[in-house]
Amino acid sequence: MEKTYQLSVDEKYSFKLTSDEVNKLDEISYTKFSESEKQNISHILHNEKSFSVELLEENFIDRSYTVKVNGKTYKVSVETPLDQLISEMGLSLGNDSVEDMIYAPMPGIILEVNVSKDDEVKQGDFLCVLEAMKMENALTSPRDGVIKAVNITKGDTVDKGKLLIEFKEND
Image: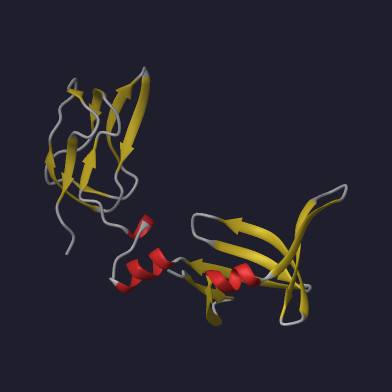
């Protein structure tokens, strides 16, 4: 099955590009070194036209890039087929996701519990401290909310995956 990617350029232009179209591009890439910098440059032939493309910035997590094409700079974001499906379903990933439960990321001992039932917390507030392998791991709130339940007390030994703290659901 052919994959289709959705590209947005400077948040003004949007187009789709299939994996077959990408594979048909005639590209030569090289790295140019100067005293002050290293440049990754590609020359692409498409429809008998030559394009010089330089990658200036890249953010793999957000799939956003700043590229220079024939001397002009563009901001490009790419949606994979999975990103498009998630968006069509009205869901989201990453920082926009809602977390209602905090689980132990590893086995350890609870050194501190900083919240109680019905406490209001803000994103980033310290919820508890878990000691694992002689290191203290402060677990923070992933979102603003109200605590529904605290399933741990100071001194508890917990296994990886144990439910520690629950939030009341957001409306």
